[in-house]
Image 1 (spheres, helix red, strand yellow):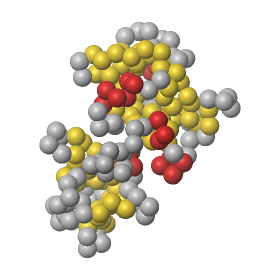
Image 2 (tube, rainbow, N blue to C red):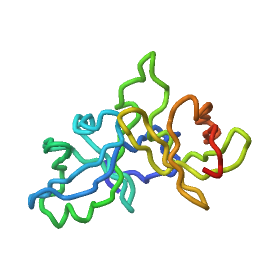
Image 3 (tube, helix red, strand yellow):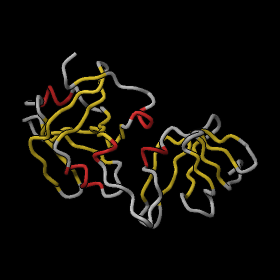
Image 4 (cartoon, rainbow, N blue to C red):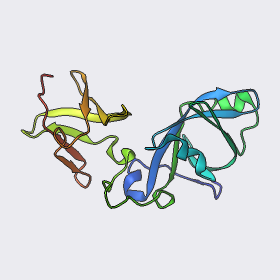
Length: 181
């Protein structure tokens, strides 16, 4: 294993790694990648000089050689990806950075990131399990938790009226939500 690789872990929030996006498309024939950002300001994903790709072999550091915004699309050229075929092998790959590379939360902001919420169990304030957070959606007005359970997928507004408690240490989010909805 090279210096730029280390095994990926399932407890990345605890080890200091944050999933900031994923590779979701190809751009051109010279290995450029389309990126989907999980950051509050999606273009911030293009500001890192190095991204870590979570592959089957582990976490690989890749220098960011070039970036561009193509309308709403974010595209980047990474070290070691020189053509469309090598880029194709990375489709769906999660992109991480060390938590220390992210700015600190401001005084008026919550002390967690979207990435902190992914995978957390969700239950009602009465203790009824609803599933776990599989993604978040920015609607412009507010963020929405996408909660996938055994019976259905729920979209729950991430607002204090509906989400009175986020317990990162216990890995649970309590919501004021009707389980039949």
